[in-house]
Every structure is written in structure tokens, then in C-alpha cells.
Image 1 (cartoon, helix red, strand yellow):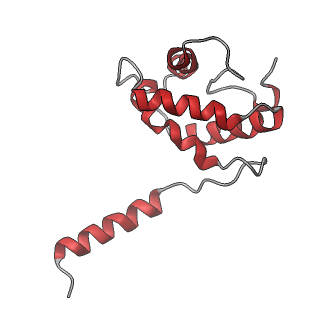
Image 2 (tube, helix red, strand yellow):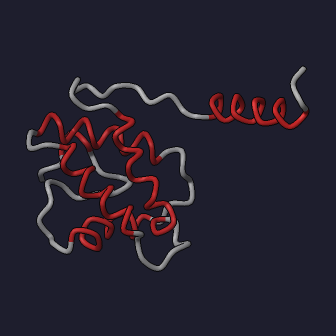
Length: 125
């Protein structure tokens, strides 16, 4: 017979799995929307709870743009994944989201700007 602690832990894990959003594959088959989850360490910064992004956040930003590749199709796919993931976080500060690439990458040269209201079909305007 399982102990109360084991049963509670199992139930908690099950509830966590149920609350985890399904992340579908993007239109570009080489990009999985779960790749965007690499930006989770950035939540403290983009919600205003941290003054600066954590180093793991900046590594995630670098990985995010690497995943985006160099084609317009892959940029669009990663953009759509990002926007879908962002919908689940109502407390994001738009100005912090848009500053994240330059704060982390220390450059103004990145494949496309990051914002909550970006038009994924027209990233390079």
C-alpha cells in the first residue's frame, strides 16, 4: 500500500502534466515549439521581477535565435511558437520582451526583433 506522501506526490505530478500546455510542431518540421521553452529562465526579467536577465536566460536567447535559423520560413515558425507560448503569460512587460535580445546579445544585429505584437508573416520589414 502506498504511503500518503507517495500518493500526494504522484497526484501532484499528474496534475502538473495536465496543466502543461501542448506544444505542437511549427510549420517548419525542423522546428519544435518546445524549443521556445528555452526562454523560461527569462520570465523573471520580462515580467519585471528581476532587474537583469539571468545568464541562463541569455543562453536561451542565443539558442532561440540559433533555432530560428536563417530562412524566412524558419523565422516565421519560431515567431509563431514564441507568440503562442507568450499567450500563457499575461504579466509580460512588452518593453522588456523587446529589449531582451539586445540586453542578452549585446548587439543590434539579430535575425528579427522580438515583441509580443510582432507580425510573424512580415518579420523583415
